[in-house]
Length: 139
Image (cartoon, rainbow, N blue to C red; front, side, top):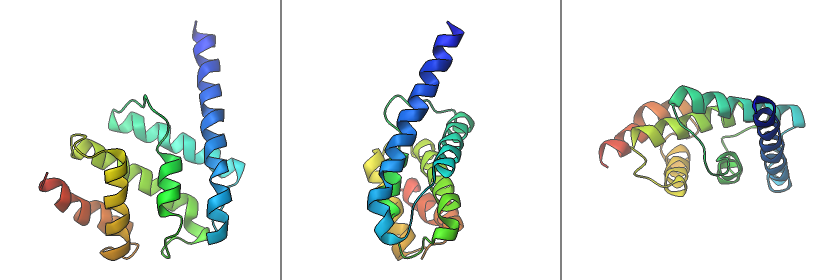
């Protein structure tokens, strides 16, 4: 039974990595692409964040949507792309919890992107500690 679960988890991870790597087709025009190794690291970071937030993921990973939402940002550079995505997914799950899941995934991503671009000007710390906190308080 344990071996079967491990195989299922590996297969799910492969599928998730494939979907993330497929995003390179869209993100490449913005100079942003993830390698297979970076993708593996990003998926591992997502799993760790889910555990730390006490969340269970029953649907598909949020990472492809997150990548597609933020790939056109002038504030994301190739040199920090992986780290920025890791931070953005951490912020996403933190605020899913903080909002009591009152915002859909798409609503939260839209809100994050708008604040990141127009208010925070690419400052992830400001996004996490100030901008989104204010929005969640109004829910």
